[in-house]
Image (tube, rainbow over all chains, first blue to last red; front, side, top):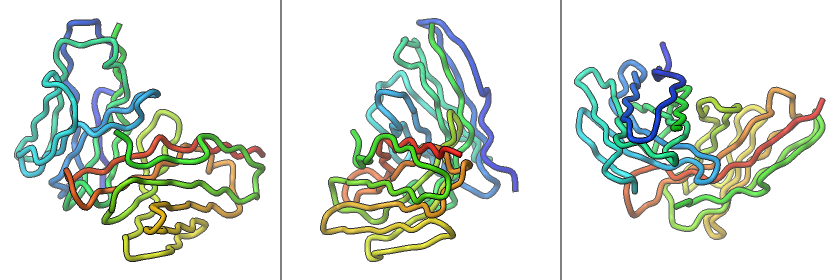
Length: 113
Length: 112
């Protein structure tokens, strides 16, 4: 069974730009959650999607958004990038919910200049 | 906000020794999980312990949970160089949004 796939793995953007990150979950997993990891704040929950619906949301500004498609693939978008958005963005999938065992992708490393 | 706080923040031991990491949390939980992360990569699930369990084993891993003290420990026995990684505890609160909240992690280094 293929694992969670995140693309791109690395990207560099400048302030004010926007970025879209993609996540393909493990086949059959309907829950996809996103986390931001930074040295200062650690792992912070962004949001979770289940069957194309956002079920849970963390405490991030509206510049952070996401969506899930009918095949469970998910994207997250960050608009009007700020320097502080530089982070490792991790996607995780699970079969039944966000509080059970999560299967993580390798992450997308975003650098904002 | 962080639910779990790990202690120590960093730990360096010799190969073959045992490593113990601790996690404390603030609110009542359904279960507690431990994850490992190799440098800059994704997290890997190690073990899940439910709130009504006190101890759980998986290979060289032993996890304990004390809900009265709101704390957990992860013991890695007979450590290997490949165990070098960061270890995170994660909890889900009984009340509040359905999400896993991760601690800041313990950076474990195994010296050959």
